[in-house]
Length: 117
Image 1 (cartoon, rainbow, N blue to C red):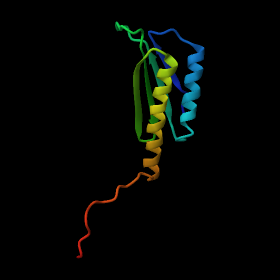
Image 2: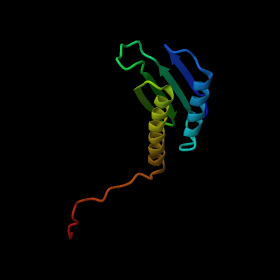
Image 3: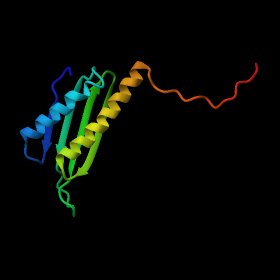
Image 4: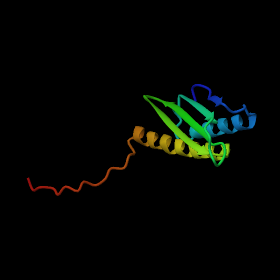
């Protein structure tokens, strides 16, 4: 990554363990697309009233050449599960972006019948 990973905790106490986990997950994204410019991860615990318990929100903004990939996953009580789900979605989007950049996108066969011009 050209820039260091930025991590923001909103309405939740800072945790070195969570920060380390986020940095490891963000670094792994580069194995799927090595041209990532930057990554900003926001972990939030909104002050909404829930019947189940406190639900974590995770937002990942990934800057890539010419675009930005945004993943917004929320509503899980376990912060590590919320992070896993968000980074899994980010990995899929980064892989897809890389495929499009390389021109590896699958093309569907045309349903048109060729005419005998």
